[in-house]
Amino acid sequence: MKKVRVGIPLAIVIVMISGYATWYTWHRHVVVAQAAECDYQLAHPETAPKMRAPDGSMVPVMTPCLIGVTPPSLLELIRGRIVFADVPERMQVNPYTFWDVLLGRYSVSLNSGVLCGQSATTTNCSALSLTPKFESQPYVPPDPSQPIATWISATGTPISLYGFSFELPVGWHGSVYSSAYTGNLHALVQSESSDQGFTIDCPPSGKGLEAATRFSSEERLFAAGGIDYSVAFEKWTAPGNDPWYFLWVRMAHDSSGTYCLAQGSATPDIAQAMQTMYATWSAVN
Image (tube, rainbow, N blue to C red):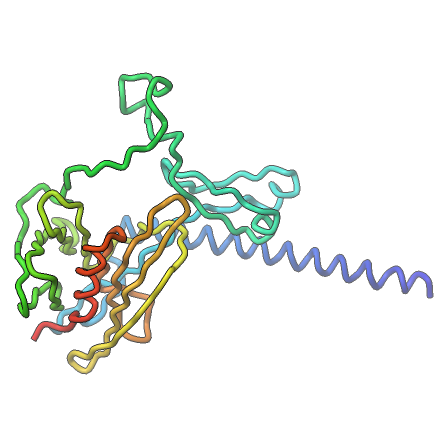
């Protein structure tokens, strides 16, 4: 009887440890598979699934991937070695708790200590300041050729892009570029030529979001050609980053693919512009 009383708790402990080991190994496998899928999607955009756009054409749709890191293997944890893989360049793993380790849950942020790449400069990195300087830089389009379209917004005048239309506050202007390889569209939208503005990508690239927290979200639907679409206006923040606005255009009730993604820093002028876009985004008439 005494052996039974000792054996039952021991068996429970063994089952719990075995269950955790199985879960952690599965969780890490999922993270590795997701990272590989994102990398493949970036390298082969032509393989992205296609859906019907409002103008009737079939267009690729892509889901941006959250930037994360591959947690250490279970064997590394047992050995006390917490080693991360797939840490993006110039990023660092944020401080984590004991529970983060157990759950394999980590996030990344900008690493100000590696802003200098020694291979890219003749100046000794140790002599340079490690304090990041977030200064506005000249905009470089994805294709060195001239934009395929330019426009300036006016009251009550819709702007067409990728089979959709939207309005902006008066005086905003945009430059639209087309990828020479995929045909995807990329637009830079600014209130003044000296402003950083925000961008619209149709469809978006596969990566680009750090592990983030969503502050707010609102969503509306519109129909075109018998298809329901959703437009979501959201505010996000990530560790070490300033808040950011996103405007997602997807097929309603299906968040697996994104037709267009607008994104820009959370400033009052961009908030107003993207709120107007959100309220007026629809199919081209």
